[in-house]
Image 1 (cartoon, rainbow, N blue to C red):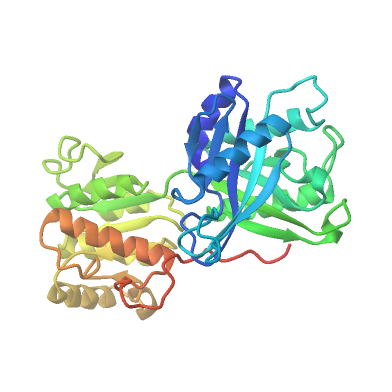
Image 2: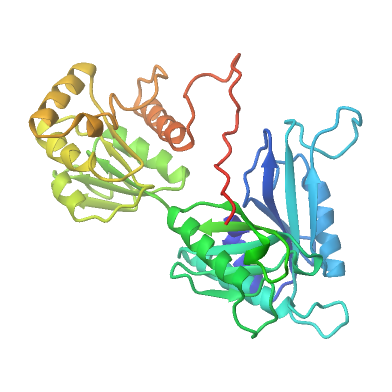
Length: 392
């Protein structure tokens, strides 16, 4: 749901009724991961995707039905060799979908007593995510039928709005407090995951499954070295959703005119700029200067930070010299092993555009645990599933 927050937030502001179908679990090879969503409003307008096209039509119908009945539903879609006309995933995997109607408060008999609370929680989560703030939405996926589809909006400080197993205004329950704590931890890591809560943590007296969606500000990419390769890397990084900063000590090269796609262009010594930043574990650092007077003090600091990726451009000879200088500066072997250099995957790249692609490919592979090898003829899974959360 939060992956299409901008559009759904606009729908909320306009007072539209809509139903949102969210992937809550995947089994085997699946095109979209938990949190991917498709929404349909009362006029039939659709946004988002849950399968890349395989089951969109069936999910669209489920959303329309949920809007008419006001009832949430959980449906599974797989693949059947026996029925060539069955709706399913051609990739051979399976997905579980939670469909939740989000309707304005009504006076008719069909409107559930928690509809205003649900809409308020959903609207609050969408507003925060659309604004670029960190926000989590917790959906109750399995449990007592009257509770399925209920949602909490959880803030980074652990505060929350909405209800899971209580009535509006009754105060937080053990399940809601547990859900908020789990969501806060996942939000800090920028992760979306399912959480199993045992009966002892639920006032309803039976285990429940929760989907925690996290929406966090874009991860940062810091590109050091205002060269032509950097301009192309910035373009690819923006496509991948990074907030990109270019830093170089040379004002004649570090200009917004040369890097129109960058979010920031900083003129300053790279290591001093890095010292001034607070970076989280999703941050990516790409050192393209291949000049020892810039590289060594910068990498000396970068390799000791808990960031996701540190890569440096240069030939193998440059890399060997760089390692020697870093060892002289006191950088240990464990930190040196984190350095990706020469930067990028072996694509045979030659142009700045191709080189940027090879760097971005290595970053994506490193982020998701991919090998970077060709999928042809291999037995490894195409989609690497995120780790499943243990029971709370």
